[in-house]
Length: 443
Ligand code: ATP
Image (tube, rainbow, N blue to C red; front, side, top):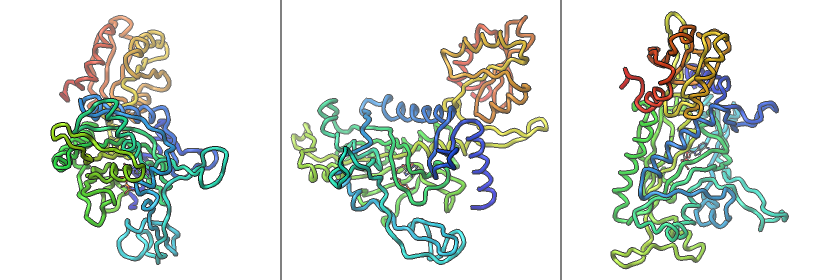
């Protein structure tokens, strides 16, 4: 990593800790490597990303339904899916700097960090194993799911029966996944416990190509709606040699992560999984997972287009994209220019002086039932604005001495620093309007 990149990541990691976005897990014990805890603002941002995904993928569509499955899964699921056989990465170690790398992530035969000599590749199993019940023998071995999608396939028949959905339709899920990554690094980009947002779209085999194009477009649209700049997003087709064992074609949606080799890192994979998974589970379980195509009156195994993204990577892309340092009126400020729909705190209520706190608290109470808002009375007003800029809060509401007489408050917008003064009685309505339509100048 170049000095600039290291510097940017250091600054972001530090901001995340300072403002309560993300903490190193088990920090007081020295920290558990590549395990992360989300703090008060982090959990809100994560929830906002999840809600946006769920709304875009499920609530807004007639033909996508949701589910939430168990993390500890029947071991035969992973036999059928191919994970027990295929889910391992060949790794190489550097004899000089002791760095460890995925063989498929490096070019040439010397260390990408220091140019040192590398060992022969060795395999590392990526699934977390545990035991279910009191017995500690092989028959009790179960796995923490390394992806959420297999539970969708094994519940295919249940969901068709319960919902009477007709092809084409999708099943979506958000949940934890676990991979014993060997080179977990780059903050929440690659961790061992992470959350996936996956959707499996079942369709007629002859329509799979069309739906693949459709979902690739839709997914790019979602990332843009989060406010991520389009110059920092791209799609990349997988080479034939890169394709996973189940995929007949795959595109990645990538973000220009500063630490990524060649400048781009995966946010999400869109794959045409053909009928691989349903067929594999039919074979392993001996159950019928076919679908009755009523138009042609024949049983078929649907094909599947998968969209598979990660919350941690989306959250990191959103934060990196929003982070900026600038000079305003001769003073430096750090801003998280988060889209208002994602911002954990929508508005902060700030009394100009502690003497005004009682009246300002009344405004805070007016807003609280409607929006996630914060009250802050400590420090100079300039310091409090800076804190909110760093936290990504789009609007600050200031109660000053004139407010006592004119019953009005000032709303300041984070990016333009423009201000408007409005009557206190309109504050809920005005904030709702700003949340829906944005700041007037930006409309
Ligand atoms: P990579 O090549 O970077 O290891 P992958 O191709 O193995 O990723 P998938 O199996 O396609 O990843 O998983 C789907 C999504 O889940 C990824 O696009 C990513 O957003 C997320 N994801 C996968 N592994 C991790 C991880 N270790 N930490 C955080 N997110 C992850």
